[in-house]
Structures are given as structure tokens and as C-alpha cells.
Image (cartoon, rainbow, N blue to C red; front, side):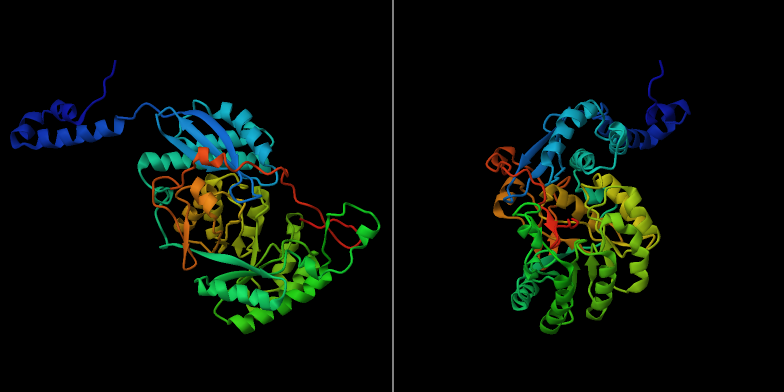
Length: 449
């Protein structure tokens, strides 16, 4: 049987022990080295996953959070992740509790990359929002555990900070231009330098005239109505008004939300160039990615895209061909922290900056993961912000804060965010299952999304 060779034994085997001992070097140095080795080997037995489970709550009203907890063989050590898929939350719960839990049990919590790769292919069919969100919950929880074991926030594990805090943008909307102007000025006074402006809801639905499909009895009475022309006419006027009343220093963003035809998006972006938008978001649907070459050639407006992406086949071509300026990938939809780090690294070499999707339907743990990545990467662009309500902060202690337009993370080990399961029980999921209601043109044609 071969026994481990300590530094002291090695020195003695070389005949150096007596001389060094006489000088006092061996005892002091060897004892220090052996003590360090003992500290490292103290936890030599692997820490393994004992259970993976999904927990739901709705602390933000109608938003359906899915939190994934990973328990381990080390007493008291657990990790938390986010697998929120607001439109299909119960499918993620099933994927986690019935499939990922038995798959993950007994695996070493240190092997994050291996667990991600093998879990990713464990369903054979992959790159879908349900399994990606479930996988994200497991992945984030393992990074949380790694940070807790190291006694460090996750961003320190990947190279530390590139900036002191994370600059964010906020949202403003109004049913008329004066109302929108006042909202923007309030956010400017709060310290925000970047503001996304919307004229009412996505597609400015309040500007539409009578919906003929309702008269014809097509669809359901609750189906929403949006025609392109009123929206296309209103958006340049909105930008002109906010620029003239709120100044040139504020960075203005706008979300088309994919609700118009590709050629209409090209024309609109060209019209908006004169107002110097920080970026125009989701000008095309993912099904129309092939139009980005024409859009890029036609306008200098910065383009942001990606919140619906869940496959490398969607983001890699846009990055490598430099067809977008900002990548809007939704971290949990992409599969978690592990793949999103790789996306950011790829994008850096092609001059594409980050603008991770940060909506209200991403729980504070998911936001923490985005923010830790924002702190680290060189090619950070901007981060979408959400100011969580008091109920969410009670259930998720350690949630990030906003100050002067910057997001500040909790510096506790891991993600720095905990989850109070008992308090979460006060906020069950709403009765509505979560699907998006249809939006239609006046003749009843469905609008994406």
C-alpha cells in the first residue's frame, strides 16, 4: 500500500532532515505545510447532492416565481437557484421534482460544468424553455453552494469586479406624451441615466381604432388589438417629445417587442436615428433573425436582441456576424450562469455588449446571477432593473438594492440572497395559469408575441 508522502518525509528521504532540523527550518516549515495540507484535506470526502426541489410563490402579485433548492450531504449547506418561467411555471416544477432530482442525487456539488453538460443532454431533446429554466435552477444553486463553501460572493470566483456597481435602466410609459415626460423626469431625479420609454403598452394598443375581428365574433372578446400604423406614427413623435423636454443627456431605449413586420422595423429604426437611441430592443421576432443583415445595413441605431433565445443557434450567428450591439439573453432561459458566462465571453471578442433581460418575472436569485456576471465581464453594456416590492424583499432577504441608478449586490457568500420558505407560503400562485393572452390585428391575425 502506498502512503502519501509528506514534505517532512520527502526531505528526510533526501538526507536533508538532520541538517535542516538543526537550523530550525524543517520543523517550522514542515509543520506549516502539513497544517495547510490538513486544512485542505479536512473536507476531502465529496459533498454530494441529496435533494433538488422546486418551490413556487407569487410575492410580486401575478408573477409566478419558481425557486430551486439543492440540499447537500453537508449539514446546513444548501444552494438556491431560479427557474422562473412565468407562462409555464408548473411544467418547470415537474421537470425539477420528477426528473432533475433523481438525476442529480449523489453527484459532487463541485462538478458544476459536468453536471450542467450531463443534465443538459439527459432529456435528449434540448434547448427548450422548460428544461433550460429547470437546468438553470440547478446550475445557479450549485454556484451558490460553491460561493458559500469558499466564503465568497460568486463574482469573486470568476475573477472579481470590473466596475464598482452595475448601471441599470428603468422603465417609463404613459398614455399621453405629457404623462410619459413626467415619468422620465421622476426617474432622472432618482439618478437613472438610462430610461426605456413606451407609449402605453407594447405596440401602443390604446391608439388603435375598432377591432373588426370582435364584431365578426372571431377569437375571444378579451383578445387584445394592435395595428402597426398607429404605433409606427406615434413612436418618432414620442422620441422627439422626450428629447426636447428631458434633454440630450438621458439615454433613451425603446422595445418594439417584435410586434411589427421586419420591413416596418427597418423603416422605424431609420426614422429614430436622429434621436440617438441607446438601443432599440427586439425589432424582430426570433423567427425572423435572417432579416438582421438588412436591418444592420440600413441603420446605425444600436440593436438589442435575445430575451426569447434558448439555443446557441439563435445567438451565435448574430454575435459572430456583428449584427447586434447588445445581447438580451434571459439568463435562466439560456440554461443558467454556466452557459451565460460563455455567451458573454464569446460576445466580447465580437464587440457585442451585455444587456441581460431583467424583468419582474425573474426572481431575486436570478437577478443576482445576472448582476454578478455584470460586475465581472469586460463587455458589460447595461442591465434592465426591477425594484422589488416589500413582500419579495421579505421572502428573499439579501435582494439587491438600487441607488442612483446603480444595482448593488449583497456581498454575502454565494449569490447573497436567501429564501424564506415559510413566509413564501403566504403568497401562493394565482389561479390564472400564466399564458399570454392573444394580440390580434383588426382582421384577427395573431401578432407575435
